[in-house]
Image (cartoon, rainbow, N blue to C red; front, side, top):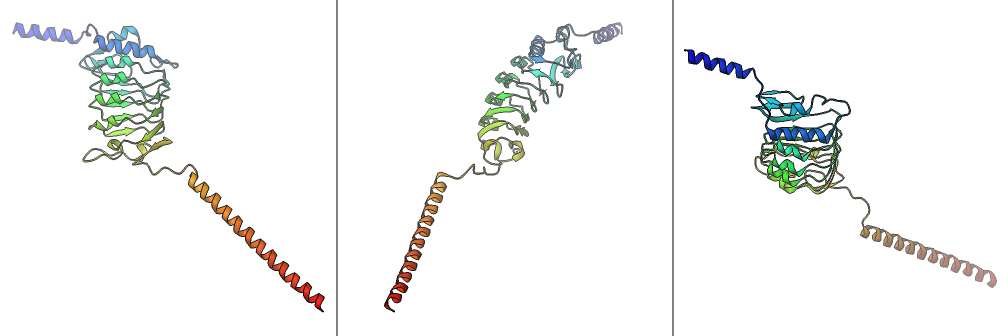
Length: 265
C-alpha cells in the first residue's frame, strides 16, 4: 500500500512540473522561423528565446499559434498577423509538424524545398502572401499531404507533375498566381476514386491552360488570317477597280455614239 502511495505521489509531483526542455529540433525550428519573420504589430511578442527552449509541456503549448502533442510541435497556425519576411527552411526541423498555416500575411521569397523533410505534414496553407518562384516538386515527398493551398501569391513556372502522385490530396488551390504551361493531367483530370479539382483551383493564371480550365481565348488574328484578309481585301479592291473601269468605258462608248449621231444629223 505504501508503495502505491509513493508511486501516486511521484506521478502527481511530475505532472505539476514542466518538462526540462523542448525537443532540440523544435527549438531550432522555432528560433530560425522567428528570425526570418518580421512582426510589425508585435503579434508574436511572446515568441522569445526562453520560450523556444520550453515551448511544449505534454499537450500544453506556451507559444501563441503553436499546438503541442506529446511534447512536440505538431501544428503552427500564424494566420492574418501582417507578418513579413520569408519562410525559414529550418521549419523542416519541426519533424512532427502535421499542419502549417501561414496564410493571409505579407511573406515574400520562395517556398523552401526543405519542407520535403516534414514527412508527417498533412496541411500546407501558404495562401494570400507574396511568395514568388516555383512550386517545389519536392513537396511530393510529404506523402501525407491532403491540403495544398497556395492561392493568391506570385508563384511562377509550371505546376509540378509529381504533385499528382499525392494520393491523399483532397484540396488543391493555386489560383491567382503567375503560373504557366499545361495543367498536369494527374491533377486536372484525376482518375478513379481520387478527389477531383475544378477550374476554380487553377483560374487566375494567365498563361496556364488545360482541363479543367476553359479553352484559351485567341490573343489575336493568326498570320494566316491576316494574310487571308489582306488577299481578300486586295482581291475586292481589284474587282471594284475593274468594275469601275468597265463602267467608265461603257459610258465613254455610249457618249461617243451619241456624238457620232449628232455629227451625222
